[in-house]
Length: 319
Image 1: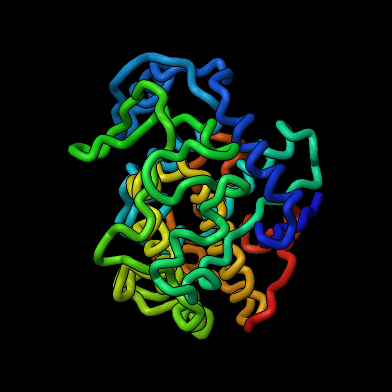
Image 2: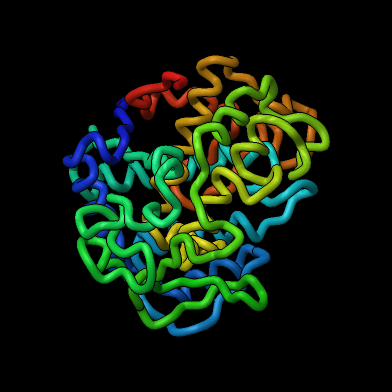
């Protein structure tokens, strides 16, 4: 069923259902324990460790685990989710699976993920950006410190990334943490001219396919003169949005839904062209390579180039 993804500020019903769905998915009733993740990693000889307390996890926690797992699988270019052509298709698959779980837990098959057009907030004065509407109790709660207000005040973080070795740590459940705009090197959000630079690129990607490439994917991911665009939003929000366990913060999905919208907007004007083609480019990033998945069917970039069977956006107009 094709659903419509809308701007979170346009439809308060979508906003409220998103927040409620995340709250429901964050309940630790999945039947999966931290020790089960340890056994899964060891049985499959995967390059990620886990330590800490043994506790029952939520479905939302499993999405956090999935993201860090993909980041831990290093390829000849980047990893299985970032730093190369796979960045946009992998996150598209990932969000489709979360959207499906939200539809189930809400019992609303027509529900579509909302997006946050962060470039609009990027035009606010710097001192106002972290005080914008998104960071109020009706939306995502506090932009700085512990998140205690509104529906997101009920979210609990159980899995974090160890800053020393990159592994997972299962911790005593705690509130979300944010540090929006406190990084002195990234005091503001991206602005529309930054978006326009990505949308103007004629190519999706090109050799050597890495963080140095000038192309739509790499500029949108945010490595050129970085952190920019996608990367800049992660660093600007900070706190739990900064490490590989960044999906702990639901703003992760609002950010990535907007990034996906910009990719879809680019394809609407430039064509559904993906580089590298079959039998070209680095392994793991090619058109027909199977992407890393632990929830739902594993898809290829080819399989997600056109998302029409799952969703559409409310607008793909270029300003």
